[in-house]
Image (tube, rainbow, N blue to C red; front, top):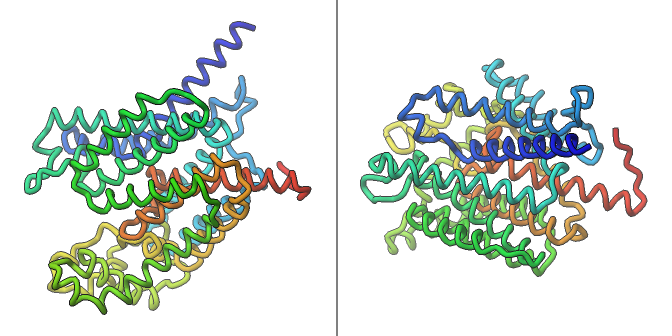
Length: 423
């Protein structure tokens, strides 16, 4: 009996270690270490996440291989499974890169299964602790890299902190993610009368690092999300509709109002195009209304497709900056439209609304977690592609929130007498 308990504890430790590892890589590790030790390091780590996610699910499934079950088709998560199926099938039908698309979509599906498993496997506090531990390790690796290679860890012109990341914005948003999650964890621990001195110190230290990044967008995102977090503590809002309406409204107002007031920004010495984003967005809309409007070009494939990219670049011949702006749409909705079309966007909105349909009735900690994650993805998505990856930290956090909403909304349905049959 004692041996069984000991084995269970060791198994639990291994599972937690794999979870921490998966989130560490999703944050961007090894990052610039790949420039030092070779790109193969980054490739190995990318596939290691895939293996770690599967192993974590396998090791938690009982004491023998007969207990192994990665896919648990609980009907509470039907909308998420449907989302994954639609994206997978649609992408495989439209892409010109079948093998690469298959790998991309398979990894996305495994990530979705992993986060569904994760929020079933751990209570919210422990899950948050594991994510925050992964983030602390990520920060430590950033600091170690800065001591080892200061010329690579700081931007030459401005002195902005880059750490393991290519750009200050990438580093900034990764730090913002940790700051926000640690704040939620501190709030949870205070509610349970637990000490959180060390987490508070880490929170302050990471905020200082964020300031060193000089990443205005990440800083604004962090402050806005922390403000909304304090609102979610006190007020129950329709967070699903808020996510969708906020994302659409920002894009609409930006494209209509900012050009009209361009002269005001010029008087203030500011850029009214959001560093070239507005002309880029207008061109993307023009391209997508004429090409693959409903299906997109395949999940994660648009910017890999030279012919598709040329459609966007055609409007910026002679403009070096915009003509080489190939890292993404710099907006969550437009990026998703490029890759998955209006069908994919429809499935995304459906998943959000379904998972948050009973958000006002969820336990307060689950509601605050969902609302904070949605706010982070939405605000970051105003000017960056906060969704569209297959295992990055924002994608994992987003589907984690969706899964949590589906699970607890389903449990509330059961309590209310709505019959749900689980496989």
